Length: 225
Image 1 (cartoon, rainbow, N blue to C red):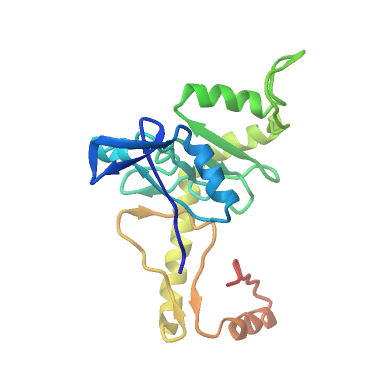
Image 2 (spheres, one colour):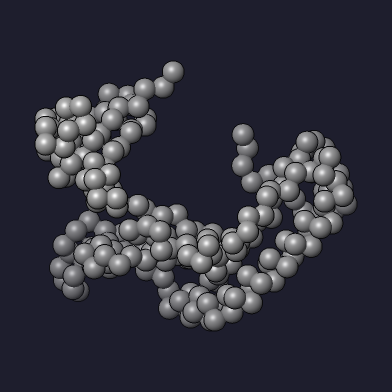
């Protein structure tokens, strides 16, 4: 059995309501981050976080979503693009991704001006000018050449996604005759995938991997479970 400590957030504070009454609350901690650290230091690995203001208004109020959109450049989910779901979103320009730089790179996007200004400083040692460091930061600026390659690739992203989807459809069709041995993920209508990787579920994975490698066909196990 796993125990998930709950943090109910209202007006930016940790509270408990009496029988769900928003007018009857008891404040347990003024700082939710501090309360989360208390739970973590007590040995808990998971938290149940409730945005009470958000529940009342029907929108996120006290919670910010950090979106992992690393494989999503060029994809769409019912007309909505990756990178538009979170308060802040991260993209990867790794060579396997749909948009890549010369080696590796990445990008972060947000509509929050305060977060944007902080990121500009954080990626450059926390500097606000040549002689002044305001916060503890890192050296994480992309080289101009990497940016040039990324911008060039961005112009071709629709074509790249179209080709990748066409290749995936070909694989789906050809592998469908092995449905007793290979399970192809369901392709959901209204979704456009980037196919950074083409993955299937196999009944005899290791045996199939060995067979393909003997035929000089490269195959990788992405994650071990």
